[in-house]
Length: 189
Image 1 (cartoon, rainbow, N blue to C red):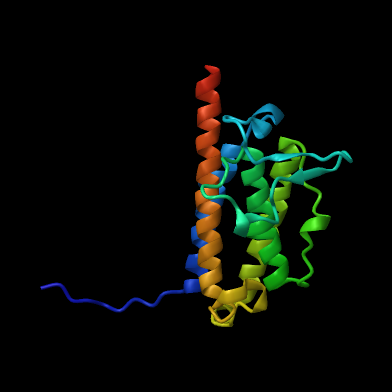
Image 2 (cartoon, rainbow, N blue to C red):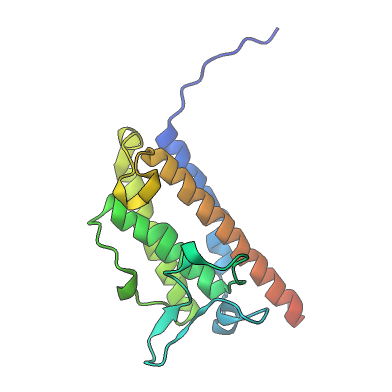
């Protein structure tokens, strides 16, 4: 007969550990060697990406229209996905929930190169992770707040889980695109 034993769970630690494991073991190492050509590669016509506007300033395609995206939405490049991770998933949430609350997508310096994008994502991850660390166990129970719109009354723990899922799935997409790029170019890694 198996006796069930209650085990205390440190949810704060578990949520951070989940993201850290994915980010540090599976995602971040897959960015090593990312080239500018690969970063901006458009595997199909009509991709959303990051590109210079008529004024020469780099912008993320449709960054403000994600709720009104066509169905199905266009395929996105590694550049678009990294910018989405850095700005929407991590940067905006770190500022709006754990910082001064004044994240402005119009003021984002969208990365034009692979190196800039890697730094962009790394900086946003650092801010998000530090904020979650500082939140502590008790902070996971507070409401996410107005910045999450219809999810304002959900606990911060739900937001952390959501951001973990976003980083995990978009990170996996980036890795898959890197594999596709390498395979379609006939080169080794």
